[in-house]
Image 1 (cartoon, rainbow, N blue to C red):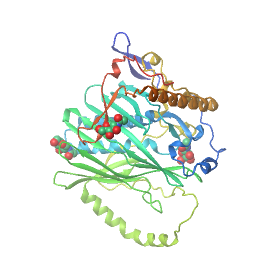
Image 2: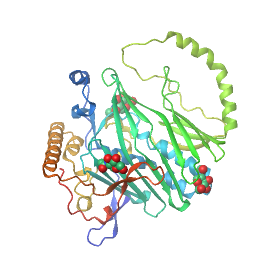
Image 3: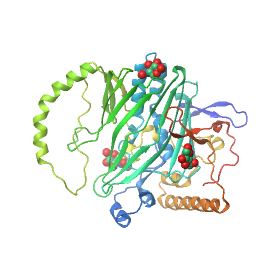
Image 4: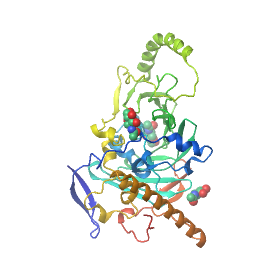
Length: 439
Ligand SMILES: *[C@@H]1O[C@H](CO)[C@@H](O)[C@H](O)[C@H]1NC(C)=O
Ligand SMILES: *[C@@H]1O[C@H](CO)[C@@H](O)[C@H](O)[C@H]1NC(C)=O
Ligand SMILES: *[C@@H]1O[C@H](CO)[C@@H](O)[C@H](O)[C@H]1NC(C)=O
């Protein structure tokens, strides 16, 4: 049992309610084995990916707004960063948080539901000391904005995310557009970064699997110091599968710490000297083996299977553990590979109905139907909601009325100078008049 903080509507005060943490969905997922993605895509080659309607069986019963809320799963790392007096130690905790934030993607090949324009999601977790609100602020291109804050004023964490999808024949790649900002208020520090690329392999043939790659740069805007994290592409033999490696550099661009690990497992930090020494001794044995393997490899049209080489992270002597992933619940495999945290995101806890905004994802009938295993209802409802959204857009264009976002405004990120959607406040006052009827 954990405590949930519920804002009482009339008194405007927080009240404590006892909540049983949900660690399971109502029913296991529907099997996808009977449907060929190829038969669908064959008809669609050349179409823009966002225009293709995939059967709902390839979804997972969460909205993308709920999916991005999973950044908060390892919130203890932000709380740790807030409490550390040394700035390099803080950067380490922030780096671990940035990696942990994308760890829930591991083996999650289900596609989250596209949020409807104006859809919102809130999550208050008193026991973890934060509350979050998000809103779908644009439909074309899809943009989701979120804002999380510490309940005791330690931090603000916000961003706007607009993944750009590219269809590469055998895979779909999501480019992580948008900036993520973390402000540690007591330290007067702001950090910004963008997520790595995410690729789903074998969308046509073979087994689906997920790879994340690219460089994530976490910049401390008070000084311009940064942490560079390289999410490695898995490469031909899978040696680098899931690996993340990087460093923190100080003002004089001197590397003061190496950070390494796997985004699916754990992250460590160690001093650069120990790391280099360890690398050198490792390399000697490897060169010969790799040459032999390269000669055997060739190109083909088969499925790109996930490489099997999966030795766990090799710990360099003298390293400190920064973060380790929690194991998933036993029934996760039959429930979209959800983490415990994800299992609870769509739960309508007692008392919530009265205080959530009517635009909250938890009220989406298609997601709810899918969660309960009613796939036909889910499909029908999804179509109905999308049709309703199209009709509303048509009406607006006739009347020259522009859509206006409710809780976020189009602005400029004060640290990067880039366009960003910023929280305009007021959501938790719970005055929900004039919210659009989107369901
Ligand atoms: C869950 O993970 C397993 C094991 O890696 C994988 O075979 C399966 O396809 C995944 N399921 C989903 C829905 O992503
Ligand atoms: C970030 O900026 C603050 C404020 O100038 C500075 O004190 C701190 O050393 C920097 N932190 C890191 C990790 O570079
Ligand atoms: C937001 O503002 C930028 C310029 O600051 C503009 O280019 C962009 O079109 C705006 N987006 C929306 C949805 O209003």
